[in-house]
Structures are given as C-alpha cells and as structure tokens.
Amino acid sequence: MHWITASLIAAFFLGCYELFTKLAVRDNAVLPVLFFSTVCNAVIWTALMTFAAARPGLLPAGLTVAPLTALQHGQLALKSTIVAASWVCTYFAVKQLPMSLASPIRATGPIWILFGALLVLSERPTWLEMAGVATTIASFIGLSFAGRKEGIHFHRNKWVLLLIGGTILGGLSALYDKFLLSRMGYSAATVQAWFSIYLAVVFLPIVIGWKFRWWPRNSFQWRWSIIGLSLALLVSDYIYFGALRNPAALISLVSSLRRASTLVAFTGGLVFFHEKNGRQKLPAVLGVLAGIVMTVMG
Image 1 (cartoon, rainbow, N blue to C red):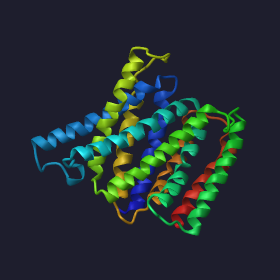
Image 2 (image 1 turned 90 degrees about the vertical axis):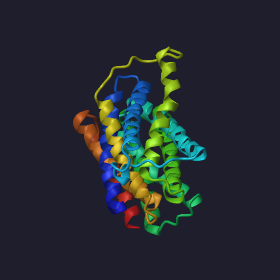
Image 3 (image 1 turned 120 degrees about the vertical axis):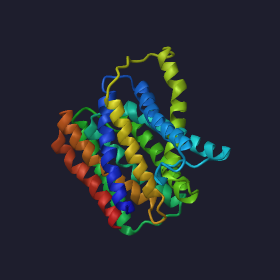
C-alpha cells in the first residue's frame, strides 16, 4: 500500500477514535478510560505474541513482533511515556471542549511536527508546504474567534492550553516514531505491541491512585465506546506505523495527511453531539484541511 493511501486510511480510523474518545469520557472519569483502553490493546498484542511463540510461522509477517534488547525495550518505554503525557492532557481537554473545536485544534499537530522535522530530521519543505502551514495557522486563529461565541477564549482557557500541550507532545511522539521506524528499523508490529504494553504499565500506578482516591476524582462508568476507541486507534496506528517505515515518507507529510481525521471528527461532533455554531466553525475547519492539502501537494 502506498504511504499516502495508508496515511488517509489511518486518518479515517483516527477520526473514529476521536469520536469514540468523546463518547467514552463525556461525564465520565478520564483516567480509567485511558487505562482500560490501553489494556485492551495490550491484551490483543500479548495474545498475538503468545500465539506466535506457541505456533511459530503461522502469523503473517506484518503481525510478527521481533525480539528486543534491553536498550530497545527502553526506547519503546520512552515512547509510551511521551504518549501517556500527551493523552492525559488531550483526554481531559476533549472531555471539556466541543468536538468541533477540539479536533481542529489537534489538527494543528503537523505544524509542530514540521518544525521538529526541520530542526531534528533535516527535512526540507517546499514553499507550498510552508504556505500550507501558514494557512493552517490562519485557520486556527479563525477557529479561536468561532470559539468565543461559545464562551471559549483560546488564550486563557485552560482546556485549550492543555489540548495544545498534548498536541505538541503528540508531535514529539510522531518525530520519535519516524526515528524508530525509519532510522532504527523497527517493524510496525514491534513498536505497536511493546508501546501498548508499556503504556498500560505507565497508566497502572495512575489508575491505582484514582482507585484509592489519592486526589478528588469523578466516578467511572464502563462504556463499550472504550473498546471502540481502543480498536480504532489500534487499526489507525498500525497503518500509520507502516506508512512511516517507507523511506520516502516524510513525517511532516504523513502527519498532515493523517490529520484529515478532523473532517470525520468535526462532522461527527455536529451529527452525534449536536454541537453549536457548526456553520461558523466550518470555514476554519476547511482552512485547516486546505493547509493539509497544500502541504501534501508541495
């Protein structure tokens, strides 16, 4: 599968993941949702690795997890730690913000990734890619004006700032993904399997603290959307990691394409959650997507 096609398919499932996330955390405790969703993925990959060990050669190569050294385990544990910090910020923000605002804000991730790719990976965008970034920034500013109609002032709203922080951490994780998959040569299955397992390990002490009320917290209600968000992310990440393994795939472009998920999440927010001011937000959302298209065409 071509890396551009793979990135767009990953974007669809990422949009579904964002909608399931909103369903799971709305009026619900965030930390148990994070923990149980990561446990679902960890269980799936543990079962696959157990099956592969018991019946060698029966699993497709794309699902085979390679043995790792202690240093390599540490590298994947570091990725899990970065993602855990990003998700804590993002999930709490998504719980409080309308999906039609939260998803476009998260779509600005490729901007941070592009800057990082310029500084760290020495990628060189074209003038059209830079124009795409400028368009995305302008659209983000336009989105902030639309948010004011709902009483959300971007520059002093703690949930917006938390979401931006989570997005920047997500961009750092994406740069690290490119390093692991392209430069270090990890397979998509190896990264995703151990990343999922270590992510559950990272969240375990946090959810224990939640369980024993080490801080004030909300009650938790199990919802099947937790399974939905887990499986949607599992599929999206697997396809996304496969795209990043292609040496021709620039992380700045793959991330931009993947953020076409905004259209799925924005539409779902209006249809399923009946969010307000969709018409006022639409130009800014289309501007974000236009910036993505310009980046890809560049």
